[in-house]
Amino acid sequence: MTGRISSEDLMRYLDGELSPDQRALVEVELATSTELQREVAIYRALKEDFRELSFHPATRRASVWDRVNVRVTRPTGWILALAGAAVWMAYGAYVFATSPYDPWEKLATAAVAIGVLLLLASVIWERYRELDKDPYRDVYR
Amino acid sequence: MQPDLERELIRKCKAGDARFYEPLVRAYEPAGLRLAVAMMGNAEDAQDALQEAFIKTYDTLHRFDLRKPFGPWFFQILRNQCRDMLRSRNAKFRVEALDGNVEETPGDAERGPERSRQRNAARELLWRGLERIGTEHREILVLKELEGFHYGEIAQILEIPEGTVASRLFHARRALRDALVDMNAEYPS
Image 1 (cartoon, rainbow over the protein chains, first blue to last red):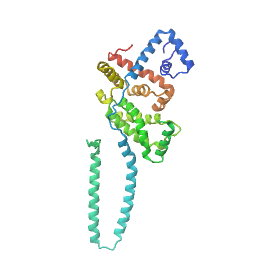
Image 2: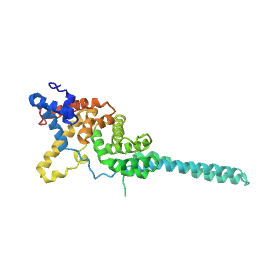
Image 3: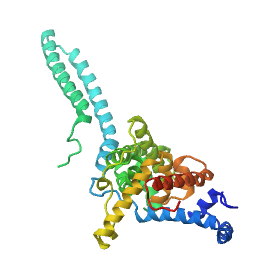
Protein backbone atom coordinates (compact mmCIF):
# COMPACT_ATOMS: atom_id res chain seq x y z
CA MET A 1 0.00 0.00 0.00
CA THR A 2 1.35 3.39 -0.96
CA GLY A 3 -0.81 6.11 0.60
CA ARG A 4 -4.38 5.53 -0.54
CA ILE A 5 -3.34 3.45 -3.53
CA SER A 6 -3.02 -0.28 -2.98
CA SER A 7 -0.13 -2.26 -4.47
CA GLU A 8 -2.63 -4.07 -6.70
CA ASP A 9 -4.05 -0.83 -8.07
CA LEU A 10 -0.53 0.41 -8.63
CA MET A 11 0.15 -2.66 -10.79
CA ARG A 12 -3.12 -2.19 -12.68
CA TYR A 13 -2.18 1.43 -13.27
CA LEU A 14 1.23 0.48 -14.65
CA ASP A 15 -0.26 -2.21 -16.85
CA GLY A 16 -3.10 -0.06 -18.20
CA GLU A 17 -5.77 -2.20 -16.55
CA LEU A 18 -7.65 0.60 -14.77
CA SER A 19 -10.76 2.37 -15.98
CA PRO A 20 -10.29 6.06 -16.91
CA ASP A 21 -11.92 7.14 -13.60
CA GLN A 22 -9.69 4.88 -11.53
CA ARG A 23 -6.69 6.00 -13.50
CA ALA A 24 -7.50 9.65 -12.81
CA LEU A 25 -7.71 8.89 -9.09
CA VAL A 26 -4.26 7.30 -9.13
CA GLU A 27 -2.84 10.25 -11.04
CA VAL A 28 -4.23 12.71 -8.48
CA GLU A 29 -2.52 10.74 -5.74
CA LEU A 30 0.63 10.43 -7.84
CA ALA A 31 0.87 14.19 -8.25
CA THR A 32 1.12 14.71 -4.51
CA SER A 33 2.97 11.66 -3.21
CA THR A 34 6.72 11.44 -3.75
CA GLU A 35 6.67 7.95 -2.26
CA LEU A 36 4.22 6.84 -4.91
CA GLN A 37 6.23 8.59 -7.64
CA ARG A 38 9.30 6.66 -6.51
CA GLU A 39 7.43 3.35 -6.57
CA VAL A 40 6.09 4.05 -10.03
CA ALA A 41 9.58 4.98 -11.27
CA ILE A 42 10.98 1.69 -9.99
CA TYR A 43 8.38 -0.48 -11.69
CA ARG A 44 8.44 1.55 -14.88
CA ALA A 45 12.21 1.04 -15.05
CA LEU A 46 11.67 -2.68 -14.64
CA LYS A 47 9.03 -2.78 -17.35
CA GLU A 48 11.28 -0.74 -19.61
CA ASP A 49 14.10 -3.22 -19.05
CA PHE A 50 11.92 -6.07 -20.12
CA ARG A 51 10.81 -4.19 -23.21
CA GLU A 52 14.31 -3.13 -24.15
CA LEU A 53 15.87 -6.45 -23.39
CA SER A 54 13.08 -8.74 -24.50
CA PHE A 55 14.27 -12.23 -25.24
CA HIS A 56 14.16 -13.39 -28.80
CA PRO A 57 14.65 -17.13 -28.71
CA ALA A 58 17.11 -18.16 -31.36
CA THR A 59 15.29 -18.78 -34.62
CA ARG A 60 18.08 -20.98 -35.97
CA ARG A 61 16.47 -23.97 -34.32
CA ALA A 62 14.29 -26.26 -36.39
CA SER A 63 10.55 -25.97 -35.91
CA VAL A 64 8.96 -28.52 -33.60
CA TRP A 65 6.28 -29.16 -36.22
CA ASP A 66 7.98 -32.20 -37.75
CA ARG A 67 8.17 -33.99 -34.45
CA VAL A 68 4.66 -32.89 -33.46
CA ASN A 69 3.31 -34.06 -36.80
CA VAL A 70 4.84 -37.51 -36.37
CA ARG A 71 3.31 -37.85 -32.93
CA VAL A 72 -0.19 -36.61 -33.78
CA THR A 73 -0.59 -38.62 -36.98
CA ARG A 74 1.25 -41.82 -36.10
CA PRO A 75 -1.17 -43.24 -33.48
CA THR A 76 -4.04 -43.41 -35.98
CA GLY A 77 -1.79 -45.14 -38.52
CA TRP A 78 -0.59 -47.64 -35.93
CA ILE A 79 -4.09 -48.42 -34.68
CA LEU A 80 -5.37 -49.04 -38.22
CA ALA A 81 -2.33 -51.10 -39.23
CA LEU A 82 -2.38 -53.23 -36.08
CA ALA A 83 -6.15 -53.77 -36.16
CA GLY A 84 -6.01 -54.77 -39.84
CA ALA A 85 -3.03 -57.06 -39.26
CA ALA A 86 -4.75 -58.71 -36.30
CA VAL A 87 -7.87 -59.45 -38.38
CA TRP A 88 -5.83 -60.88 -41.24
CA MET A 89 -3.66 -62.96 -38.92
CA ALA A 90 -6.68 -64.41 -37.14
CA TYR A 91 -8.32 -65.22 -40.45
CA GLY A 92 -5.04 -66.71 -41.80
CA ALA A 93 -4.61 -68.84 -38.69
CA TYR A 94 -8.17 -70.11 -39.03
CA VAL A 95 -7.71 -70.97 -42.74
CA PHE A 96 -4.34 -72.55 -41.98
CA ALA A 97 -5.67 -74.62 -39.08
CA THR A 98 -8.66 -75.92 -41.06
CA SER A 99 -6.70 -76.63 -44.27
CA PRO A 100 -6.30 -80.27 -45.45
CA TYR A 101 -2.41 -80.32 -45.39
CA ASP A 102 -0.41 -82.83 -43.38
CA PRO A 103 0.31 -81.84 -39.75
CA TRP A 104 4.11 -81.82 -40.32
CA GLU A 105 3.69 -79.35 -43.22
CA LYS A 106 1.56 -77.13 -41.01
CA LEU A 107 4.05 -77.32 -38.12
CA ALA A 108 7.04 -76.43 -40.33
CA THR A 109 5.22 -73.52 -41.93
CA ALA A 110 3.99 -72.26 -38.54
CA ALA A 111 7.55 -72.48 -37.15
CA VAL A 112 8.89 -70.32 -40.00
CA ALA A 113 6.09 -67.76 -39.61
CA ILE A 114 6.36 -67.58 -35.82
CA GLY A 115 10.16 -67.35 -36.00
CA VAL A 116 10.02 -64.42 -38.44
CA LEU A 117 7.41 -62.67 -36.29
CA LEU A 118 9.49 -63.13 -33.13
CA LEU A 119 12.60 -61.75 -34.84
CA LEU A 120 10.66 -58.75 -36.14
CA ALA A 121 9.12 -58.09 -32.73
CA SER A 122 12.50 -58.26 -30.99
CA VAL A 123 14.05 -55.79 -33.48
CA ILE A 124 11.13 -53.38 -33.03
CA TRP A 125 11.32 -53.67 -29.25
CA GLU A 126 15.07 -53.08 -29.24
CA ARG A 127 14.70 -50.05 -31.51
CA TYR A 128 11.96 -48.66 -29.30
CA ARG A 129 14.09 -49.01 -26.16
CA GLU A 130 17.04 -47.30 -27.83
CA LEU A 131 14.99 -44.44 -29.24
CA ASP A 132 15.43 -42.10 -26.27
CA LYS A 133 19.19 -42.68 -26.19
CA ASP A 134 19.73 -42.27 -29.92
CA PRO A 135 22.03 -39.24 -30.31
CA TYR A 136 21.01 -38.85 -33.95
CA ARG A 137 17.23 -38.89 -33.52
CA ASP A 138 16.92 -35.14 -34.09
CA VAL A 139 19.36 -35.04 -36.99
CA TYR A 140 17.63 -34.39 -40.27
CA ARG A 141 19.09 -34.89 -43.70
CA MET B 1 -3.72 -15.16 -36.77
CA GLN B 2 -7.29 -14.07 -37.52
CA PRO B 3 -9.72 -15.48 -34.91
CA ASP B 4 -12.09 -16.74 -37.62
CA LEU B 5 -9.30 -18.57 -39.42
CA GLU B 6 -8.04 -19.94 -36.13
CA ARG B 7 -11.49 -21.27 -35.25
CA GLU B 8 -11.83 -22.86 -38.67
CA LEU B 9 -8.46 -24.58 -38.34
CA ILE B 10 -9.38 -25.90 -34.89
CA ARG B 11 -12.72 -27.12 -36.22
CA LYS B 12 -10.92 -29.10 -38.94
CA CYS B 13 -8.44 -30.51 -36.41
CA LYS B 14 -11.30 -31.54 -34.14
CA ALA B 15 -12.75 -33.41 -37.10
CA GLY B 16 -9.51 -35.42 -37.13
CA ASP B 17 -7.53 -33.78 -39.91
CA ALA B 18 -4.07 -33.16 -38.45
CA ARG B 19 -2.88 -31.29 -41.55
CA PHE B 20 -4.73 -28.20 -40.33
CA TYR B 21 -2.77 -28.24 -37.09
CA GLU B 22 0.45 -27.09 -38.78
CA PRO B 23 -0.53 -23.40 -39.22
CA LEU B 24 -1.55 -23.27 -35.57
CA VAL B 25 1.76 -24.77 -34.44
CA ARG B 26 3.74 -22.39 -36.62
CA ALA B 27 1.72 -19.38 -35.44
CA TYR B 28 2.12 -20.13 -31.74
CA GLU B 29 5.63 -21.56 -31.82
CA PRO B 30 7.64 -18.32 -31.43
CA ALA B 31 5.64 -17.03 -28.46
CA GLY B 32 5.46 -20.52 -27.01
CA LEU B 33 9.22 -20.90 -27.26
CA ARG B 34 9.75 -17.54 -25.58
CA LEU B 35 7.54 -18.56 -22.67
CA ALA B 36 9.10 -22.02 -22.43
CA VAL B 37 12.66 -20.70 -22.55
CA ALA B 38 11.85 -18.19 -19.85
CA MET B 39 10.30 -20.90 -17.69
CA MET B 40 12.82 -23.67 -18.30
CA GLY B 41 15.92 -21.49 -18.60
CA ASN B 42 17.36 -23.19 -21.67
CA ALA B 43 16.31 -23.75 -25.25
CA GLU B 44 16.71 -27.52 -25.29
CA ASP B 45 14.28 -28.23 -22.43
CA ALA B 46 12.04 -25.47 -23.76
CA GLN B 47 11.72 -27.18 -27.14
CA ASP B 48 10.88 -30.49 -25.48
CA ALA B 49 8.22 -28.81 -23.35
CA LEU B 50 6.84 -26.97 -26.35
CA GLN B 51 6.61 -30.14 -28.42
CA GLU B 52 4.79 -32.03 -25.65
CA ALA B 53 2.46 -29.08 -25.09
CA PHE B 54 1.48 -29.01 -28.77
CA ILE B 55 0.81 -32.76 -28.70
CA LYS B 56 -1.27 -32.51 -25.51
CA THR B 57 -3.15 -29.58 -26.99
CA TYR B 58 -3.99 -31.60 -30.09
CA ASP B 59 -5.05 -34.61 -28.02
CA THR B 60 -7.42 -32.49 -25.95
CA LEU B 61 -8.80 -30.31 -28.74
CA HIS B 62 -12.15 -32.10 -28.46
CA ARG B 63 -12.58 -30.37 -25.09
CA PHE B 64 -11.74 -26.92 -26.45
CA ASP B 65 -14.61 -24.43 -26.52
CA LEU B 66 -14.57 -22.76 -29.94
CA ARG B 67 -16.13 -19.59 -28.55
CA LYS B 68 -12.98 -18.93 -26.52
CA PRO B 69 -9.58 -17.76 -27.79
CA PHE B 70 -7.05 -20.50 -28.44
CA GLY B 71 -3.95 -18.64 -27.20
CA PRO B 72 -4.60 -18.57 -23.45
CA TRP B 73 -5.77 -22.19 -23.56
CA PHE B 74 -2.60 -23.31 -25.30
CA PHE B 75 -0.36 -21.28 -23.01
CA GLN B 76 -2.10 -22.81 -20.00
CA ILE B 77 -1.18 -26.27 -21.27
CA LEU B 78 2.36 -25.14 -22.04
CA ARG B 79 2.81 -23.59 -18.62
CA ASN B 80 1.59 -26.79 -16.94
CA GLN B 81 3.90 -28.83 -19.15
CA CYS B 82 6.91 -26.71 -18.15
CA ARG B 83 6.01 -27.01 -14.48
CA ASP B 84 5.55 -30.78 -14.77
CA MET B 85 8.91 -31.15 -16.49
CA LEU B 86 10.65 -29.01 -13.90
CA ARG B 87 9.10 -31.19 -11.18
CA SER B 88 9.45 -34.62 -12.73
CA ARG B 89 12.98 -34.26 -14.00
CA ASN B 90 14.06 -32.66 -10.77
CA ALA B 91 15.41 -30.12 -13.20
CA LYS B 92 15.91 -26.64 -11.97
CA PHE B 93 15.61 -23.52 -14.02
CA ARG B 94 18.95 -23.96 -15.76
CA VAL B 95 20.50 -20.96 -17.35
CA GLU B 96 22.44 -21.75 -20.47
CA ALA B 97 24.98 -19.58 -22.12
CA LEU B 98 23.00 -16.61 -23.30
CA ASP B 99 24.04 -17.08 -26.89
CA GLY B 100 22.15 -20.33 -27.04
CA ASN B 101 18.88 -18.76 -25.96
CA VAL B 102 18.62 -15.37 -27.50
CA GLU B 103 19.58 -13.54 -30.58
CA GLU B 104 20.49 -9.94 -30.84
CA THR B 105 17.57 -7.68 -31.58
CA PRO B 106 17.68 -5.90 -34.94
CA GLY B 107 18.61 -2.60 -33.29
CA ASP B 108 21.68 -4.03 -31.57
CA ALA B 109 23.87 -4.11 -34.64
CA GLU B 110 22.91 -0.57 -35.62
CA ARG B 111 23.94 0.79 -32.23
CA GLY B 112 27.50 -0.43 -32.47
CA PRO B 113 29.54 -3.08 -30.66
CA GLU B 114 29.81 -1.26 -27.32
CA ARG B 115 26.06 -0.70 -27.06
CA SER B 116 25.51 -4.27 -28.17
CA ARG B 117 27.87 -5.54 -25.47
CA GLN B 118 26.10 -3.45 -22.82
CA ARG B 119 22.72 -4.74 -23.88
CA ASN B 120 23.95 -8.32 -23.78
CA ALA B 121 25.33 -7.77 -20.28
CA ALA B 122 22.02 -6.24 -19.21
CA ARG B 123 20.13 -9.17 -20.77
CA GLU B 124 22.34 -11.58 -18.92
CA LEU B 125 21.67 -9.74 -15.67
CA LEU B 126 17.91 -9.82 -16.18
CA TRP B 127 18.15 -13.49 -17.13
CA ARG B 128 20.10 -14.22 -13.93
CA GLY B 129 17.55 -12.21 -11.96
CA LEU B 130 14.78 -14.39 -13.35
CA GLU B 131 16.77 -17.43 -12.34
CA ARG B 132 16.86 -16.25 -8.73
CA ILE B 133 13.13 -15.72 -8.29
CA GLY B 134 10.68 -18.61 -7.97
CA THR B 135 8.82 -20.27 -10.82
CA GLU B 136 5.56 -18.66 -9.74
CA HIS B 137 7.06 -15.17 -9.95
CA ARG B 138 8.91 -15.93 -13.17
CA GLU B 139 5.93 -17.25 -15.09
CA ILE B 140 3.66 -14.31 -14.33
CA LEU B 141 6.39 -11.82 -15.28
CA VAL B 142 6.99 -13.62 -18.54
CA LEU B 143 3.29 -13.68 -19.40
CA LYS B 144 2.90 -9.99 -18.66
CA GLU B 145 6.19 -8.47 -19.75
CA LEU B 146 7.27 -10.70 -22.60
CA GLU B 147 3.96 -11.79 -24.03
CA GLY B 148 1.86 -8.78 -23.04
CA PHE B 149 -1.20 -10.72 -21.94
CA HIS B 150 -4.03 -8.86 -20.21
CA TYR B 151 -4.91 -9.72 -16.63
CA GLY B 152 -7.95 -11.74 -17.70
CA GLU B 153 -5.84 -13.90 -20.00
CA ILE B 154 -3.12 -14.35 -17.37
CA ALA B 155 -5.79 -15.43 -14.87
CA GLN B 156 -7.00 -18.04 -17.35
CA ILE B 157 -3.52 -19.33 -18.13
CA LEU B 158 -2.46 -19.53 -14.50
CA GLU B 159 -5.88 -20.79 -13.35
CA ILE B 160 -6.21 -18.11 -10.68
CA PRO B 161 -8.89 -15.47 -10.01
CA GLU B 162 -8.41 -12.30 -12.04
CA GLY B 163 -8.24 -10.31 -8.81
CA THR B 164 -5.14 -12.22 -7.76
CA VAL B 165 -3.13 -11.30 -10.87
CA ALA B 166 -2.26 -7.78 -9.74
CA SER B 167 -1.17 -8.99 -6.33
CA ARG B 168 1.01 -11.75 -7.82
CA LEU B 169 2.55 -9.29 -10.26
CA PHE B 170 3.37 -6.92 -7.44
CA HIS B 171 5.19 -9.62 -5.49
CA ALA B 172 6.95 -10.91 -8.61
CA ARG B 173 8.17 -7.48 -9.63
CA ARG B 174 9.36 -6.73 -6.14
CA ALA B 175 11.19 -10.07 -5.98
CA LEU B 176 12.88 -9.41 -9.31
CA ARG B 177 13.86 -5.90 -8.33
CA ASP B 178 15.35 -7.20 -5.06
CA ALA B 179 17.23 -9.92 -6.95
CA LEU B 180 18.65 -7.37 -9.37
CA VAL B 181 19.65 -5.04 -6.55
CA ASP B 182 21.39 -7.99 -4.84
CA MET B 183 23.39 -8.48 -8.02
CA ASN B 184 24.47 -4.85 -7.87
CA ALA B 185 22.32 -3.80 -10.76
CA GLU B 186 21.84 -0.07 -10.99
CA TYR B 187 18.25 -0.06 -9.89
CA PRO B 188 16.14 2.33 -7.84
CA SER B 189 15.86 0.73 -4.37
